[in-house]
Image 1: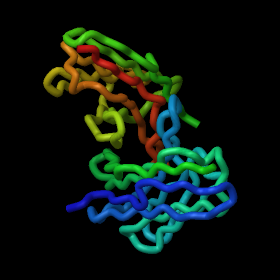
Image 2: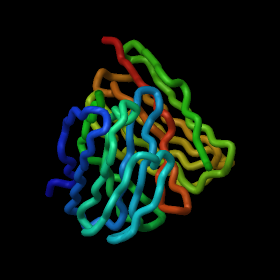
Image 3: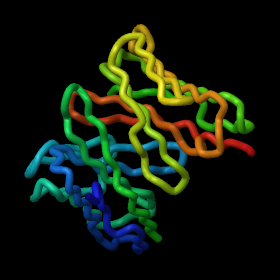
Length: 114
Length: 110
């Protein structure tokens, strides 16, 4: 039982390049999230999904796109990377039940944009 | 939108001392969660509080939810080096989002 798996773990991009981060979960969770973490700023929600085929914007969605074609996968895309997108990206999934929405996080993907 | 303020941002303690981090909101929260992130790791769920005035304990950790459901605290008694990390509070909004505070980074000096 792997939980939440993120690939790649590390990536270096040049400004203007594109890339996709993949998140896969094997817990049959309905909800999936992408956060970015920057020093002193905690975790900020980029986009999230409440089910297959649906996505919604979070707090900092600009410059990112997402897709949830399959329930177990949530992709985060950067079409034209900028240095401001240098960050650690965390994917998470959850199941809403009994009034609780407990997130299980992946190990993170560290992205550097030069 | 709703936000939570977490204080302090950093805390250095001597091993064996107590530690407390606070989470404050200007609006009433339906629930509050706490997560711990070890250095170089990912956030891991610790606990959820939903009731006004609720207090929960996990060994040396005590979690409280304020009577007005606008603040919460995490208290660690007699810190150990294994307590090192960043502690985040978070709350769920109506849109199934989880919003995190900025975290308190705890350093425990041996």
